[in-house]
Amino acid sequence: MTSRPATGRLALGAWAWIMVIVVLVPLGAIVVSSFTPDPVVTFPLRKLSTGNWHALWQAQDAWAAVRLSATLGVANAILSTALGTIAAYVLVRRLLPFQTLALAALLMPLIAPGIVIGVALLTFYREVGIQPGPLTILSGHVLLSLPFATFVVAARLQAMDRNLEDAASNLGAAPARVFAQVVFPGLWPGLLGAVILSFVISFDEFVVSFFLYGTSSVTLPIWIWTSLRFGSVTGLTAAISSLVIIGGVTLLVASAAASRLGRRRIEPDMTFEGAEAPVEIRS
Image (cartoon, rainbow, N blue to C red; front, side, top):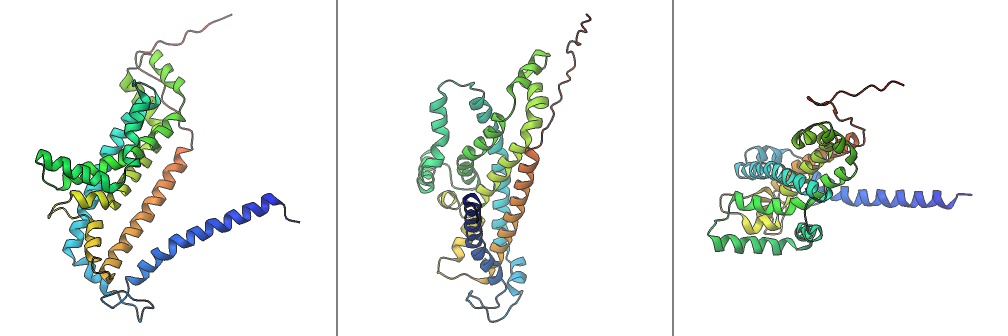
């Protein structure tokens, strides 16, 4: 007779596979539809063709949107991770007064709807005379990504032993060297996860970007939305969406690899120049 724990695990596994199928079927349909020869995607496909992929290589406006989204993603990943690391270190090590207030302010982009953030930023930039463009989009992406980057790095910091930092300071290491030789070796998997997550958030963001983009700063999500305004999915849109899916899977694998490496124990370098030599005590 099957035990209850075994039945529960079987039911949980079946439910997980159902969720995987629900997610993968629409993505697979997009990839398959990119091989349709018709201008508008319809199912079932009459025949397969690579014409949309050939047309994609010649779509300069689409590639311009991809380049802008990738550039904004990289810039957002760097800025969000750098600012998030500082915020995480300050919050975890409790170096800031009014911790609760600071944490509440950090959580605001997660609580407020994207449309509210977009309208607020657009109103602010209009009041100060800043025209919409790549920099305004980047500011919105950093605002959205900063809480995620902070919490990813903070989770890694909380798992580290604070006594190692104290021991390094007692050995004569400066604060910058403590961070470089003690904190960073154990922190970099969290930093890598924050970089990947921030890049994905920026690359996929539509709502905030829609309020902050200019005529010469069309990101990929906005380009895809423009092609779907008339309610039809074209083969070209399906092809470029397939590339995004492939890129997302690649980043997912990279994130999983970083998480796997993060579970390994990384020994910090506890040797510092100028440190006092240990005293040998003889009985």
